[in-house]
Length: 62
Image 1: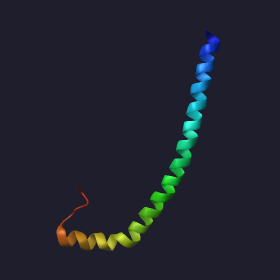
Image 2: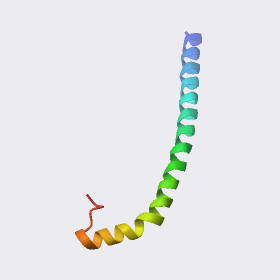
Image 3: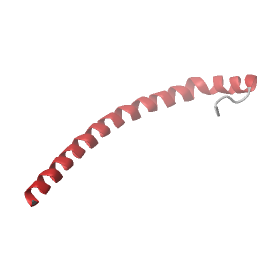
Image 4: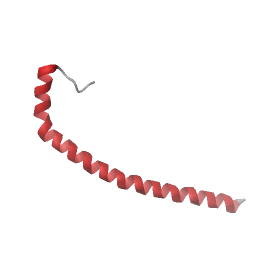
């Protein structure tokens, strides 16, 4: 009984470790991409958004 429970526990632990590792790798990529997007938006899109808001109201809340 205990051996089976230990096997199940280790299997769950190993699967969770792999899943966490996968998520961390993906999260790093996503963070890097989102940083680049935010950076480019801050540079290129800020003035354009300001001008657009003045023309046709604030669309960013929708």
